[in-house]
Structure formats: C-alpha cells, structure tokens
Image (tube, rainbow, N blue to C red; front, side):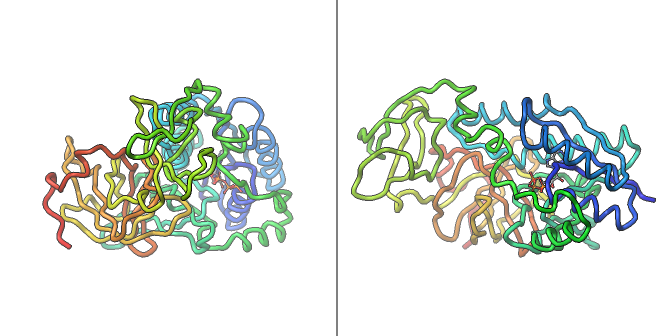
Length: 371
Ligand SMILES: Nc1ncnc2c1ncn2[C@@H]1O[C@H](COP(=O)(O)OP(=O)(O)OP(=O)(O)O)[C@@H](O)[C@H]1O
C-alpha cells in the first residue's frame, strides 16, 4: 500500500482529500502544521477536527509544531513588507516555505514516504516530452488556487497530489456528506488564515508596526488629507481614504521618505508594465526571447494578455522578467504575485517589484520588444 501524507487544516476540503485517498487504498497519514501561536482556526478547532477525522478513518495523525517557521517566513515577511510600502502575498510564500517543503521533508525523514497531498484546487500533470511537472488550473474556476501555488518547485510538484483539482466544490461537499464526514457542513474559510485569526490585516499589523500618520497627496504633491500609517493602505485602494473629492481617488503609490500616500483618479491608476522578481518557472524553463502570455496579477483578477520579456539578472538564472500588458492594468501592486499561463497551464510566476523610475525606461537588458 502506498503511503501518502495529507495536510489537514480541519476543513472540509482537506477532509475529503484524505478520505478520498483512503478510499482509493492509500495508506494515508494525516498531518497538521501548527502554524499560529494562540487560539485560531487551524491551531485549535482545526486540530481537533483533523484528529477526529483520522480517528474515524482509522489512520495515523501527526501534528508538527511549525510556529517558528511560520513566524520567520510569514509574520516577519508581512511585517517587513508592509513596513517598506509593499503589499506582500503571504499564501504563495506559505505554500512553498511553510507547508509543502516542510511537509515533504517530514514525510521523507520521519515517515519514510515520498508523497504528500492537500485539499488545494489545482491539478498536476507531467509533460511526456519535457518531463516537467505542470501545474494547471482546477476544473472549478471559482475555486482555482493555482495562482497561490506557482512557486512550488519541480521536486515538490513531483511528490504532490491534489485529489480535489478535478471536481467542483459542490462535488466536494456532496462527497463529504456521502461519506458522513463530520466536517461536511463546515463553512468555507472566507479570508487569509491570518485575517481570520486576527480579525483584519490592520489589527494584525498594528501589533508589530507603530502607526505613523502622514499626508495623503495627489501626484503633484498637493496635500488632500491625512493617513494613519502607510502600512494600512494598498495600491488600488479606494475605500477608507477619508477624502472628499469630485471623482473617486485610488492609492497609486507611496513615498516612504516623505511618509506620503499618493492618490490619483482611476484613469491615472493604470500601469503599462511591471517587473517581476524571484521568478519560478513551472511548465517551461526560463525563455531567452520575449513571449506572449496570459498573466494574472491578483488572486481574483482575470488573466490578461501580455508580453513577457526576460531580463538579465545578476546570476543569470532567468529569475527576473518584465511584463508588458496589452492594455494598461489597474492595481498593479508591488509584493503581489504575477502568474503567467498558457491556457490552463502555469508557465511561471514571481513577485511584482516596486516601480522605480529606471525600470520604466525602454528595455536595455535583454533585447527589444517585438510587437
Ligand atoms: N495547518 C495546516 N496543516 C496542514 N495542511 C494544511 C494546513 N492548512 C492548510 N493545509 C492544506 O492546504 C490546503 C489549502 O488550504 P486553505 O487554507 O486554502 O484551506 P481551504 O481551501 O479552506 O481548505 P480546507 O477546507 O481543507 O480548510 C488544505 O486543504 C490543506 O490540505
């Protein structure tokens, strides 16, 4: 019987993933990573629900204390990022550095097995020609989580199963009810686990970053109002600015030196391009030439047409690219991921860099764009 470790959050998705693999004849081991200090979703009720599931299925259950790695990789990452004026994306970072990597390491070192699974909605296939493992969008577009998984390495994709990627959430709930799982009726999580834990990102950040009020200015530097601290704002934000203006205004940038939040009309809040760093190539190796892609710049946004231009990076590993959008895009947010696709296949992805003036200059690093 093949052994497989299933990551259990205590929710319905991971319960069904574990129960499905168990039914298929795998020797399933349930594992919860204890992520957050204090009482919280995955950290108290979640563990109780996960333990009960394993008891009902008659399978082993392990809890791995991952609070330190979560603090190092996620809490510090968020606090440092917000403190320097970007909007970090914790989920892709958490998947690679906190969940999948350590889970596979634990599976290999402690449980003598080489396979892991989660309740994520995405699919993995292997390309017969290239041999590469490919990450694909889930069958259920409303639940697709491939955007958060772009940073998984080939080693992780090779070892991983997503048993729910071929079904809709409705089917998952139906399976949970049919199997009589006690988690069948558990509501879906609505937000980032950290936000569910702390109430809001602001409450979380205020524990670590002292509020530093300053001016809200327009792109000409005219003072329009006051802000409560740059870390409370994100690019594209409209609500909560407290400015009365004829047209709605959106956050378009920050001046960290002057402690300014910069706002503009929606028409001025679009960018023609952006650069992306820490790129992970998934379905293909780093290209040498510009290529057409569909790119998604937020979890809930549609993929849009763009040209990807490889940029020379210091170490020559293809880990930096420029994305030139077919149409200027709203809400291009430094710190968030840009993930590019060919149809439903993730080609690669990385983190949007803060725009600095020289990066908007015409291409010099890796050949001109051919439109
Ligand atoms: N603390 C954890 N320990 C181990 N695995 C986890 C943990 N949290 C999440 N996972 C795994 O990652 C998957 C996706 O997590 P996410 O936070 O997106 O949960 P979800 O979609 O609400 O799923 P679920 O219904 O299982 O909670 C889960 O299905 C589970 O397999």
